[in-house]
Image (cartoon, rainbow, N blue to C red; front, side, top):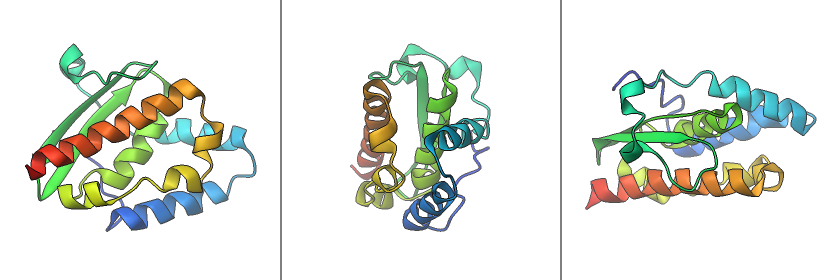
Length: 146
């Protein structure tokens, strides 16, 4: 599963800055939601055979599957959702964290969420799901470091 498009930027910090800059272009949240949907369509294909209960992320209202791979030097994540907006949230998380070292993942707080206003504009269930996704990414990095 190395057909990842990530990382797009050289560091997690650069990825977060790029996300902030991109979202600053949009005047309102209907445009930002549409952009999230468009980003979700850019996720690499996720094999149906990986859509198992073992790979399902609990804590999301939508169906979300995530499969970490790699080691402490470079971690990758294949992930998908049955929800268009959640797929966009996955894309943003992978843009920041996929293709990075486990140490960089653990050391990087997801500041982009507050910076682009996601925290205020997501429903409670989507916020919980995003928190679960980020926790799973960080947990995979912690396991790689152990």
